[in-house]
Length: 278
Image (cartoon, rainbow, N blue to C red; front, side, top):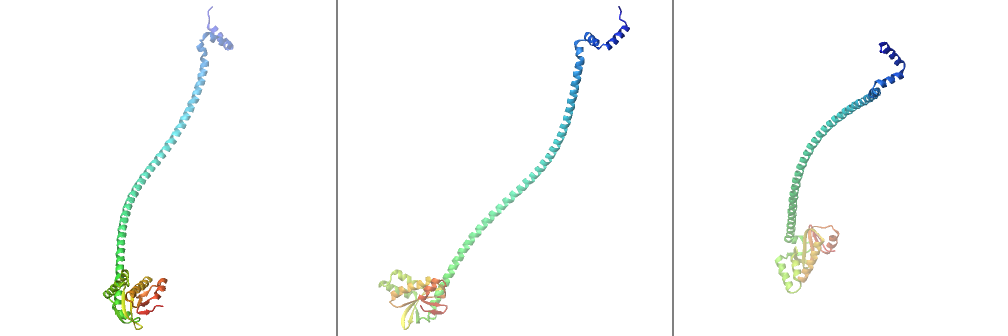
């Protein structure tokens, strides 16, 4: 029996009305692969949808990465600018450091020259002080010798308030007198040498008696001068067997207590005036 078009349309209508028939027909007409095709399509659609979501996420992540990269580039650019500024400042700092080092070197050279010049100045100053000290000593010695010579040459004037008929015993006469005393055993050679160091020795009348006067002369008389006058006068008295007046002579008497205390034991001929021992 032939299958007509009307039969086909009737079949279609029946298939539309009976879904279970359609499913059965599909199992008969289609292969297993074709039957799985809708499920695969659905799975593929789900996968495509998930892929679209993933792509969207990737696109968003890419955009975020690009934004972060842009910010990183901006930060990198700022860092590059800061690095350039730092290098410029470092270069200027190196230039300043070099200038300071050169200035320090010049300063050290200048200081070294100044130290050397100062040392030379100190050496010259020390030598000058030595020369001045020598000159002061020489001037003092000259003044002392001049003062001693003046007292010897003008003994009659300076000692007139102590003695009359004053005669200076010169160094040669004094030496001969002391030699005799040494030979006779009245004094020792050391005492002879001590008396010969006396500044002025004169003889004259004191209260009508012939005596000697031994004086130590100094611009400013000190306790040391007083002791020398007494010691040398005592040695001369032993040598001559005659009274010897110890005296100090000069411009002034030192004000220190020791000198003031000891000076009262001798004659003091100061600035044209004479004071006897207390």
